[in-house]
Image (cartoon, rainbow, N blue to C red; front, top):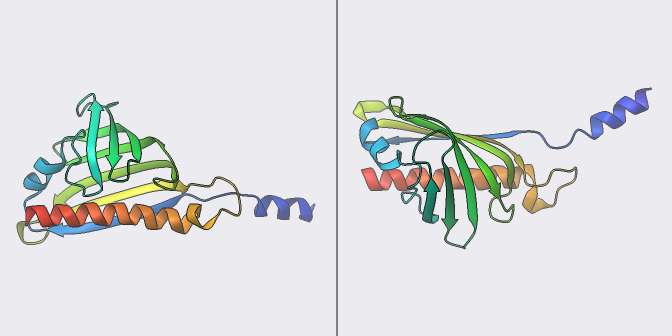
Length: 164
């Protein structure tokens, strides 16, 4: 009996990963929101060369992000609150060679920060790009966390640069 339970414990598969990146920006929450509020416009992110979408900022709206390397990420808006300066979205489909994640969801929010500025928080939860045990290095938990962290840090650094 112990051998059965030991085997089950070894075969649990990947665990959900989380990344949270925060950025202080010396601009009002309203000014930051003005730049990011359109779900179909992600031109503020340096990795995105084109955004196409349908549905505006309505729940269920979709967008396709085209990256500089030609890769695409298909996303769906799940929650949107202009008063709270936040939205929640999911990746509907992405090639793991573009972003090594599966079952990805993310919150983007802006709150008042220090000295009249803003605190922008981008957080996501996801599984690595390889669903089975013993993933190749490029599809591991660490590769997924590093990739998402890079997306968030690059985007937030560019927001800061554009607004300050």
